[in-house]
Image (cartoon, rainbow, N blue to C red; front, side, top):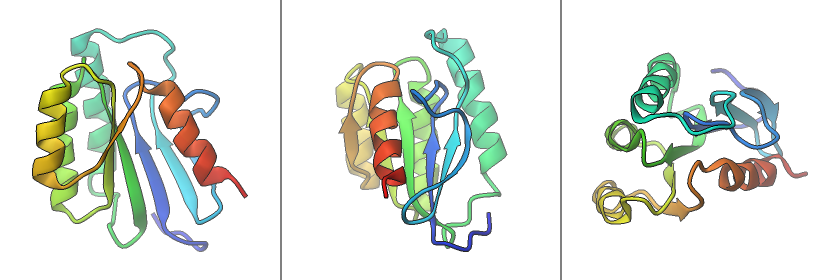
Length: 141
């Protein structure tokens, strides 16, 4: 991930981000890389874990903390365990991780976030609107 204009902001969700298909966009401070699936429904738990696993497998080894400014990781109900495991791994690599979470299992999510030193941005189930606001803010001129 080599970028000319600054460090990347990476968004990771097993769902979709409203109005922003997966891909790389030029943001005001650098690239905004959305790693998502184009679904508008709710995945079942097994599907959600599988989708998240595919995305994370493709990312690890490609994310260099020197190239990345911020990572937003969606932690929902259905892929909660995989997302929290990934959060521990990402945070351990020194990245600037923020969790974007619905309030399902809020206590467990809060405990992990506190343990790894990552802030939580609370949003709705699915995270599509909250992630859209984050991406829109990153893309704003």
